[in-house]
Amino acid sequence: QVQLVESGGGVVQPGRSLRLSCAASGFTFSSYGMYWVRQAPGKGLEWVALIWHDGTKKYYADFVKGRFTISRDNSKNTLYLQMSSLRAEDTAVYYCARSNQFDYWGQGTLVTVSS
Amino acid sequence: DVVMTQSPLSLPVTLGQPASISCRSSQSLVYSDGNTYLNWFQQRPGQSPRRLIYKVSNRDSGVPDRFSGSGSGTDFTLKISRVEAEDVGVYYCLQGTHWPPTFGQGTKVEIK
Image 1 (spheres, chains in turn purple, cyan):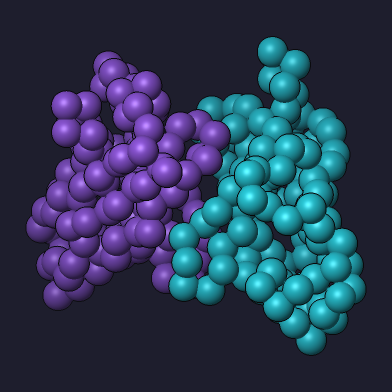
Image 2 (cartoon, rainbow over the protein chains, first blue to last red; image 1 turned 90 degrees about the horizontal axis):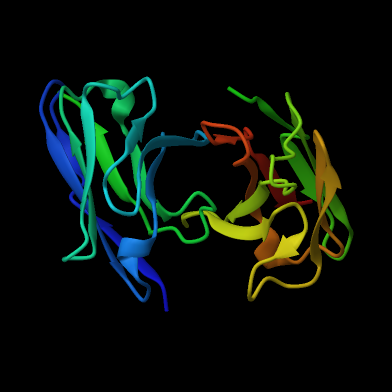
């Protein structure tokens, strides 16, 4: 069955960096585009970044452009989100989700940006 | 960006009674291929989102048939025919027709 497992969240100071991972299994990872979506505490869902199945194209929400980098390693079936220059407003649960149909989601990993 | 507006934002429901959530988009969601990419998600307390409905009215595998989706153009509805205790949570619509994808604000369903 399809599984997406995020990791790498934690507490980080403003201005610092963090890398999230999303380990995929149960499907042909290299055939699907992948999203990062986040949810601030008590708030709704917003897309953060998209990477094409082969990694050739990447798209970012304006509020992370220039600070976050999405990448993937299809040989390891893993999606990444490198986050730098973190701000308090980046505090959220970060989910990876499969394809532009968002048909499968991971359990999420919490990132808290606080001094 | 396409704005997705859900109503109501809070929906107290009696067990066994129907519930209906509206989702309106600021532009038509009909894509050039003729499909309408409007999905519905359920997020139970403490859980990640789960897709219930895709392309307006198609139920995902394992989704009870008390959930149904309908609509066209800019006006969409998620209906629960008879609410059960496990249906408590927040429901989101999402449009995938126009870039970037955008979610509705969410509708919180709770038991009266």
